Image (cartoon, rainbow over all chains, first blue to last red; front, side, top):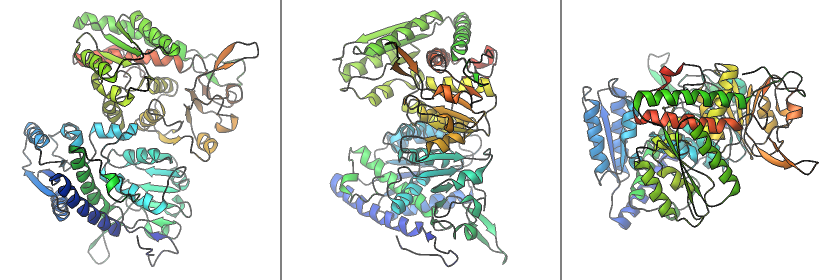
Length: 312
Length: 312
């Protein structure tokens, strides 16, 4: 991790998620090679897209490419918008039974006629590399080993890499979604943090945020978190990512944190873009390798160098 | 709920869990009768005890008796301390397949040679009336319908009965166990509370507790919560229950809250005994009825009078 400091911050360290993710992908690539040498198995990830949402098409293409880049097999299933729930379930069954597939990801959102919970829960828990099914959610809740959703996992890796042991730190999570907020809160609780969760109904979100040594924001509300939401020296992780127009008629990506006013106060902060974003796919690859290891009963972690961001 | 006030409280209302549980059992008894008339099925609960722990023997006997009292079938399996994990798993398999059994409860703690997670997760999720398996933990985490652990469910029923809609209230849970603290936090989050969870590593537990409109304490530390932990007017739910010696050589039950000094400050408070304690078995019976309903595809809640503490 470089000690890069942004020009507009008085001293807050920028957490370089892009560099971290690059290292993590390279580490994963090496481990995929070693895993193949040991077990003669190449981890395989199947990505399923239903419909023609342009953003989703970009996401699944990037996931497929990055999977390929770390030496895994990548399988793409692009189905028409009119695909029935029954036929999607049949495909998932087939992927569940396919020994060449270790991870299955169904890109969300799905068309309205398909129940996302039914689909997510149809994926075999040991192939559920998004970690969004009820079994993996339950394993995380009770503290058992399982597959952890990619974005909160990425946030936790950045946090542990920056701060080391998190035990006893006050963490506030703004946003209580199944995708980020709730699993993030459970992960931080399992790490020994005192955890508070705020959301749309929270009466004094600024005060709740200001009590935190670690502030994680995942609301999708561009610029929500102002300078008076942040305790001086706190570590701020911005999960939000919104595309907004700029003065010159182009667009740019911004986060949930008003970066320019928060960065001088925070101790460390993730930028948008280049913070949490790149971690998500890197963690998806990590989860796929983990799923492949589980499929052959290989614990994996002990042999891979034991850096504190790699037990995941 | 009676407006009973304890002699030593200046105005705090005592939350009478004993009376609430009695009403809930009576309501359950009526619904069991109606359910039998409609479906010709009698809900059945199997309770499994391994070993001779005297406290556990009392608990399972009470569970069996109360099951019987509300018109359900009660099955007891008392196995020797030397029972192997394999043979316990075989029994659970048989109970999972038995159509007369709708709920299965394995009394904890288990002897050391048996992995409690393996046993809990062997129970079919739809018969897991303790709600402690990973599938039900996951359903609670993602907000899907499932079976909710009895003690947090009982606490939530008391809270909703006292306070109505909980949305936007600040709730602090002290204790982060799988049995109470974590499911309680997720339940309150699903109800729209701003939720904070403190535990043994929390640096300023009194301040965390004092920020709460709803304070739930489940630590097992007799008298932990003092007057300066409680915001005036807050609702205090004391899950702790410890037996301590008294001056006259006898013993008495006390909670995690220093009742005499907290009661004058709190708006409402559960006593120990007679607060949360009686709710646990009443909710177990509720969960067993729910499991029986699920087994025949009966949604149940709509037909049962719609009081706000009964959708569970």
